[in-house]
Image (cartoon, rainbow, N blue to C red):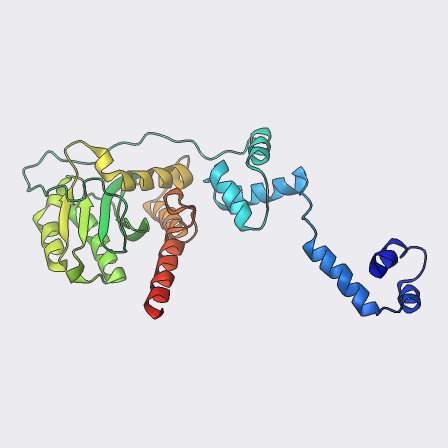
Length: 298
């Protein structure tokens, strides 16, 4: 009560005089005021202040995020805002994610090479790292010609664990991506790792099958003409092209490579993934490793 009295009359009498008369310490009064400030409900940001935060995240992600990811990124940064208010502000100021676009299929399955069975069978939820990898190829146009990108994705965390880029779409493209994943992850040969891909000639080639055999990896392939059997890689490529590559003109393949690698690194470390409850692939895996360590020590 005495602290409240001092607060109400601080403009009438000096705080030190009031504290002396009421027999309370000055430091105690200031401690009380500080505690009140720390526990008081946060005031809502003005639209102008909130817009600064929204535009900063939108620019940082190169317009990759729509409302759901923007809202979660704001909350992660300590900015609390209602979903409807955020949506209204974005609509009012024309802030939106880059639009989706159809992309050309690059798979050449018209060959007589051996086809592996579909071991994955659309079981995209995996309980541990390095149990199922998926791979695919896409293309990026440049003024020097096509740049082809092959990736290897760990289905557990959706992390891109290997990639390769070349000017030609040969078996070496996918072998290089697989070797990068292998040397980065060092999976145990006894765990029964599966590698799933489409029926492209690069993945069906004898050289590629030999590398899988050397690493103790079981091959799995999608059904003929069914892109949904490899939906995770299709989703990754769609995000890459919409969020980073679409609308850009690449004079050289080197420029396209730099932009692609920058996005892949950002995707692994920071991009909020809806399948992972809106955390990044690397964060998701780190949380799992931490939980495993806790269980082992308990």
